[in-house]
Length: 379
Ligand code: PLP
Ligand code: MN
Image (tube, rainbow, N blue to C red; front, side, top):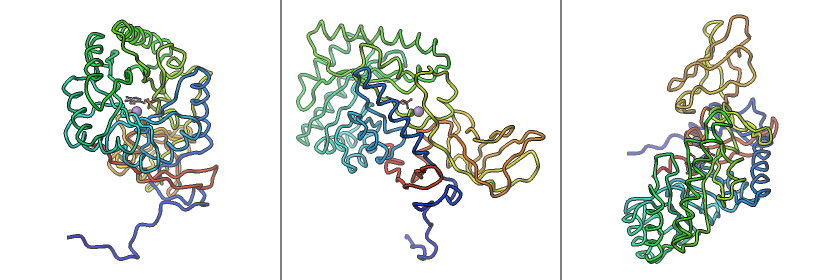
């Protein structure tokens, strides 16, 4: 049975509006609003200049307040990756959502149908039986969704494997009730983090050739393809200039992380780090080491160590469950016991998912604390 904690033992808020950064409790995810807003504008302007829609990915942050700001700047809608993840975004009033992923299973399809009665939703399909089951689920709720057939452009993840399969699936979708063929999704995650611009562009060229083949097959079959969606932060500069994409799905650009920070960028497209993990030095047991109060429960490490901001000759070398170790070079000045430091997360998407809220800072002042409402919503 559940026993409520006495009122005076409640966890206090991580920060209050008006607080300086030094008063924010740790571990905390903090957002530099000036850099964040710059990033939003940069991508929106890029998309508009080339006549491409921006549909930012919400899986990067799972925070409706962030999506609302992207929409206010002109984004056409948002992407989600999971069905339950959509719920808080609809609750926040967002009505144009693409689920950039396949949805398989009766419970998920039933939820999708209920959501589709609240908002305009599109979803990816790459299989005839899945299309049939999607149509059945929509029929049961008298709901309808748009279908974007996913094509595999080299990532070897989901997606139909040939233009012929695409045409057959599009025709099936057109025949089935309560679903309509809305276009294709062509996302290639493997391209996004390729380090050299030249390499990225080369592999991207190959993927775009493949997209064109699929579009030609649809055209020959007399099937209109209003939407071609895909792309991400790493390829956005190419995606917008291509003649294939009608919209791009970038997510990380709003925040950046060390993963994306480590690749080469075109000078014309510079996104700033806006997302930081605030940590406290909880132990400084020797001159060459400081220990932070953040670990794998506050940041993921699959993309490498988080980056430390503002210290020469000091870097994060290990992340345990609840500790991170800073190694301090001889002669370098590391942070002292009790100091707060900022880390750049290795990978923003799974890091957001570890936090209840993000502390939005304007300079050194807390402007708001935004709940990460879709945290944990991975079903
Ligand atoms: N679209 C899809 C289908 C994705 O899986 C991802 C990220 O993994 C994105 C878009 C967004 O990419 P990024 O956050 O790298 O901009
Ligand atoms: Mn990612």
